Image 1 (cartoon, rainbow, N blue to C red):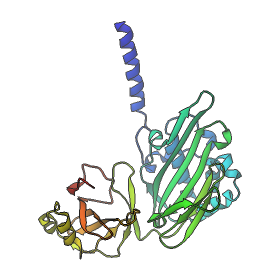
Image 2: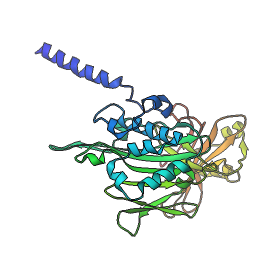
Image 3: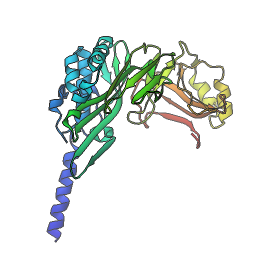
Length: 328
């Protein structure tokens, strides 16, 4: 019995080890896996390693190359059968600006899978996630949905594609349209767009100008948020920041009340509750002061304050937290 238990434990450890050391078991940048990109849905193999991130890499590569054929080859037959799909892919590629520098991290299959189960008859594997593409001219927000296996092979491949410049995502509102199977997107600049959905398939392409916005990773993993640049920004000295009692949340807000931020985030979608995230320059530093400001209908207090470099991937070890409200 002991031998049997040992063998079982060894086998389990071996399986865990083999999974642990898979090269696709951690989130990766496009630049790290671009040579392993999948560029055709016929190469999507059920339960293969890194399916989703490798398809994402193939999609990014095709955009960088201006290759509509590759994007079409990644799309499911169901998506290609939708009226207007080919025209939208042309619009997507023709409007894509700049050379790809890199992406935010592309998630592992486990991180991207939002729905997966194996029934008695049909195995289903569905992946869906968002990421950012950084080019020499623009920053794009992308979400891709993918089936690697499902009861109907016509669904294999990309089923839903959304790509927007990040200015479009700032204070973006998504709601069902009056027509059935249509999502309505209302943007801060007053424009709107509709995404037609057919058998859960659809494409949305909305390009603007992202030069006045930044996407910042303010959390662990891929928790990016979009911030609008103010066009200027006052400079704070580190001594002044250190002199503030950040636990006195109302006094901390008064310290910043007349200081112009470098960038500010989206207001709360909760009616009557003001919430704004802001970045401030720090003198002689690449790091910035980041705060959350809240209030009932108007800004009143600072509930979170930290210092970190918004141009770098965030980690808890990098941020110097000055204050965190228990209610934040």
